[in-house]
Image 1 (cartoon, rainbow, N blue to C red):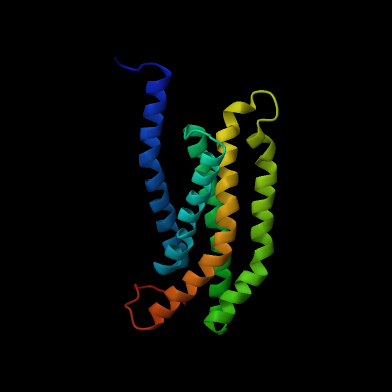
Image 2 (spheres, rainbow, N blue to C red):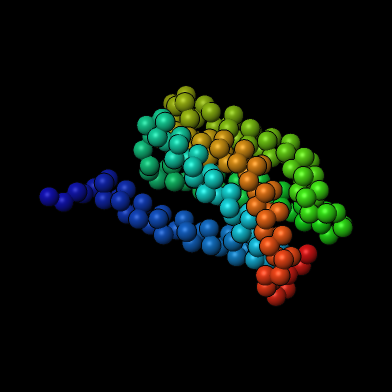
Length: 188
C-alpha cells in the first residue's frame, strides 16, 4: 500500500527541511565568522541553538503538538532570535575586552547590561505569539505548531543563554589565551 496526496507532500517537505536546517545553521555560522573575524565567537553564539531545541521539543511534547512544517518553521524563527540574543552578549563583552576590561568583568557587565533587551525581545515574541499558540481566532489552528515551537524554544533558550553563553565565552577565551592556536585574522 502506498500513501499518496497530503502524506506524500508532508513527507517530501519534512525531508527537504531536514537537509535545509543544518545547511542554514552552517551558513549562519560562516556569516558570523566573517563578521566577528573569529572561529570561536560564532561557536559560542551558536551554542545557544541546541538550548532552544530543548525548549521546542519540551513544548511540543507537553502540548501534544505534532512535528510538522509549521513547527519546523517556528524552530527556524526561534533560531534567529536566539542567535540574535547571543550576539548581543558576545559582541558587548568583546567590545569591553577591546577597551581593556578583564574577561570576567566584561562578561558580567555584558550580562548585566544586555539582559533587558534580551528579555524584552523574548517576552514580546512570546506574548505576541500566545494567542496564536492557544488557537484563538478564525483559522488559527494551522499556525498553532509554529507559535508553540517558538514559545517553547525562546522560553528555555532565553534563560539558558543568559546563564551558559557567558560561562562558555569565558571558558573559550581562557583556553584560547592559554596557548591553543588561534585562527588567522583573529581580531580581539
